[in-house]
Structures are given as structure tokens and as C-alpha cells.
Length: 200
Image (cartoon, rainbow, N blue to C red; front, side):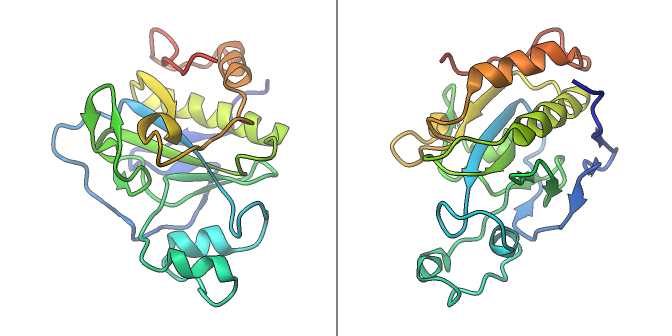
């Protein structure tokens, strides 16, 4: 794997990612260490890729009349820190130092409010289709960059912190492939070990 093209700057913005700031964030609680990386999937409309709708949702400018599915999204105010498109391009919406509104009601290892201590990455995809090679490459390189800045101890899926409510990143996300790629990259930053991941 080539050397990562991403770097998290002192303000929590990623060099190498396009920046589209979202208002759907706020300050993390004082003293909250960033320890968890949460992986999601998203497609708007469901199982359709491309188009501006994910960015529009995260910017609170979604045209709810553009598709029948969108009306149910009207009350939402959400955003992840990052979106990885099908072609591997990366968009950042929220500084990693800030709390993005991506996890919702959630619990990890007995701790509630996962937004307080996590970074959220959305993969453009669904529970019903494999992810693209370019997405795994970008995810691995972005994870490397995050590990250089934060002492992430765990990586989990939205399904693991909100079971019964969420199913993403879903059965087509290959946790073993992700783990192996991260190990092979040799770019684990200052972390003494790779973050723990779900057993598959």
C-alpha cells in the first residue's frame, strides 16, 4: 500500500480530504478522550450511489421533495466526520476535535453517548452490496492518519453500539480485510497496538 495521503492538522481537519463543514456538531464534553472509531454506511436514496444528497443531508439543505424516501429525514440533524465515496474520495464535514452527530442513542463497553468519544466515518454503500476496493484503501489510509493523532483503542460498527436500531456497516463490510490492510500498512502512528475490532 502506498504511503498515506492524509494528515490530520492541529485543528482536526484532514489534509487530503475535501472540506464541506456541517453545522451538525458541537464541542465534546471536557475531558473526553477520543478513543473509538465508528464505521457506518449510507446511501441516499437507499441503495443508490452518487449525487449530492448525502452532503445535502449533512448540511441541512436536502430537498425533501426530490425523492419519496427523503420526507422521513426531515427532522434529522446529523453528520459524520467523514464520508468515503465509492471511488475512494473523502469528504470531511466536522473537525475530528469536535463532536459530530452520527451515532445517536448508543452504548459502547458500558459507555453511553458514543458521539462524545468517537470519530464517525460513513462509507457510501448499503447492507446489500459489497464496498469498493478504493473505499477500503481510503479507509485504511484515513485510519492511519487518525491513529497518528489520536490514541484510538477500538473500532466498531454502528450496529455494535446501537444493536436492534442500526445494522451498518452491514454484512458486506469485510472486517478481516480492513484489519489485515491496516496491519500491512505499517503506519499505526504512536499507538502501541492496532485498535480492537469486532471478531468476524
